[in-house]
Image 1 (cartoon, helix red, strand yellow):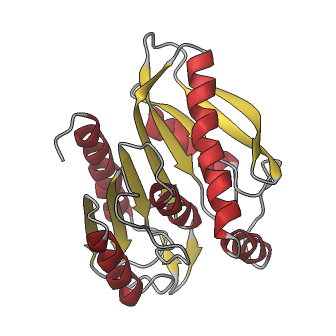
Image 2 (cartoon, helix red, strand yellow):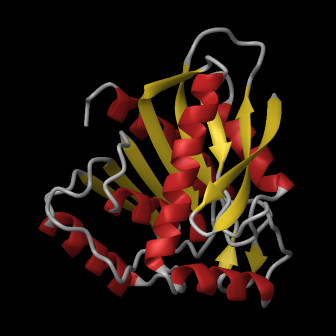
Image 3 (tube, rainbow, N blue to C red):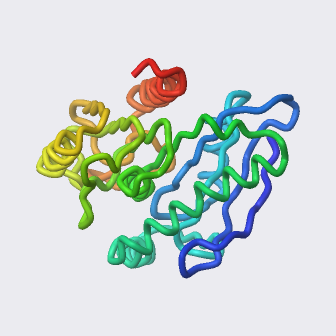
Amino acid sequence: MAVERIDYQAGSVKAKGALVWNEKISGKRPLLLVMPNWLGVTEIAIKRAAKMAGDKYIAFVGCMYGEGKTCEGPPTSQEWMMGVRADRVEGRKRVNAALATMVAEANKRGIGDSSKQAAVGFCFGGGNVLELARSGADLNAAVCLHGDLGTTMPAKKGDIKAAVFVIHGSKDPVAPKADRDALEAELDGVGANWQMLDFGGRLHSFAEEETMMKGVAEYNAPAAHQTYRMLDDFIQDAFNKKL
């Protein structure tokens, strides 16, 4: 898999993301924006994007902190994440810039089919993908995996163009059922095309192997296996206008 680090402007910061694709495959492929968790554009995040891209997608790992910054976890990750969340306007600029950069860089290389665009986000990244969809981005599909569901800027009628898929753990303490209920009401209220699936008993970050915060965020292999398969089916159905 080819991995190329890309510098781009994202709101007020100079960002550094990663374009990931199988250079041995010819022809144009759909575009998959991958927004990572609160650790930033880590090597693990890039490897995960490469696995998701396979022979099927051109993937881009977006940067929300600037300079491709990464950290090893709290308290730094909490501080950085909350800094972005505190300014939703700026956060939306950054995630929209990641989407635009993916399209531009894939087109520049002649490898992207920009008529088919999807975004997937993990945890903090899931919240960023929801903000991307709320902002009116021209996406076919937006998938939020055990993400931050709340917002200070709820969508208005007609804002959300993407089909939205939220995959969550029923016992996720980071975004509990009250947040899921609020998101459902928001999506219904604006007439969005959406689906939500709860994995019974699962906590936060169940689809990320490197995660382990006992009682808060715990990887679960069966749920992860199903999650990756279902999100791919969802995205393909969105591309083929079957949702």
